[in-house]
Length: 402
Image (cartoon, rainbow, N blue to C red; front, side):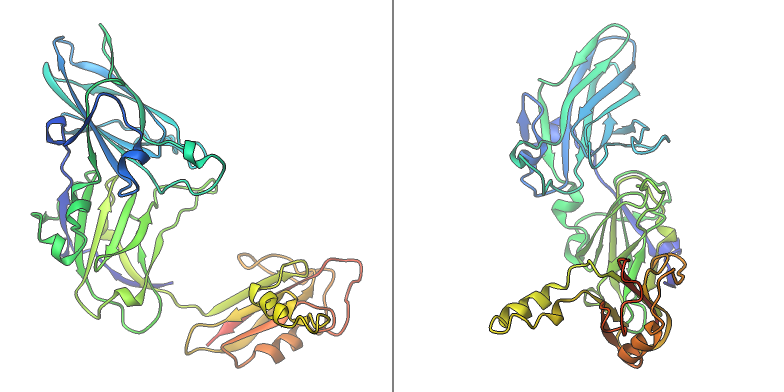
C-alpha cells in the first residue's frame, strides 16, 4: 500500500452537524413504537424515534432504558447526547450496538432531565437489511421498549405518542453531492468530534492509474461519498475477535476527476478526519494456493457442457492456480512453488512440506514467466508424476510482478 496525501490541513475541511429532531418537528406520528424496516421501507438505515413528556418531580436524575432489535442507536435528551456504552467493547462511547448474529441489545444510562417538558430523541441505525436465512418476513428491527426510571416512579413509553423521521437531514438534502452540498450552512472544522457530523473536503486524485483507497482508520462509523457516489459504509472502530478491522476503502478511478473531487463523510461516532489519507495500491507480489479437491472455475464447467458430444474430454475442469499481475506489469520471478504438501499460506511464511515435486518451480516458470497472467492445473501429470500417492496434494505459488 502506497501512502498518499494525508488530509491533515484543518482549513481544507468543513463540517455540518446533523439536527436532532423533536416530537413537534416530525410529520409521522403513532401511539406505539413502530418496527423499523416496515417504516423506512429500505429508504434509509436511519429512523428517528421522538417523544416528549412532562416532568413534575424536582428530581431531575433518572435512568433511560431502551430495548432494541438493532443494529445500533444514539440517544439524546433535550438535544444532548446521552449514553456512553458500546456493546461490542468493554469501553465507553456514545452509542450502543448489538452484534451481527444477535442484534438485540439493551441500552441503559443515567440521564439528566429538566423540570417541565423533556424531549427524547433516539436514532435507531441498521447496518444493512437481512438477506439470508429462514422466515425473513418475521425479522424485525428498531426499538421495542423505552422506559425512564427515577427514584419515585417508572415511566413506560412503549405505548405512547411517538413521532418519526425517516433518514437524516443530510440524506434527504443529498449534501454529499455538489448541488445538495449548497443546501446547508457548512462551518469551519472544529475538531469537536461530535456524533452525527458531516465532513467535506476537496481532494485531488493521486497521479497514475494505480487503484485508489481511502484510509479511514481514524474514523469511527459512518458512510463516505466521492463526487456524489457512495463508496460504502465504514466501521473501523468495530473489531473482529482477532482485533482486526477494515481501514482501507476502494475508490474506483471512474469516480475521480484529476482535481477538485468532493469527499463527504457522515461520521456517527466522532472520528478524526485530519488523519484520513488517499492512498494507492501497488501489487508487487501475487500468491495462489489450490488443493486437488478444489472445485474448478465455473467457466470450465460451461465449456464442458458445450463439449457434450465428447464427454471424455474433461481436462479443462481441473482446479487451477490463477495468477494475475496488475496492468502494465508481468510476472518476473517465481519466488516459491511447491506441488505436494506445502506448509503455510499466502498470508504467512511458506515452506516445502514432506511431500514435494522437484519439478514444481520449473513447471510454474514455464507457464508464467513473462506473462501478465497465467494458470497452472493441479494434476500429477502436469508435474511429471505423483510425488506422494497416499497424500492429498495442493499447489502453492508466489510470484513477483514487475
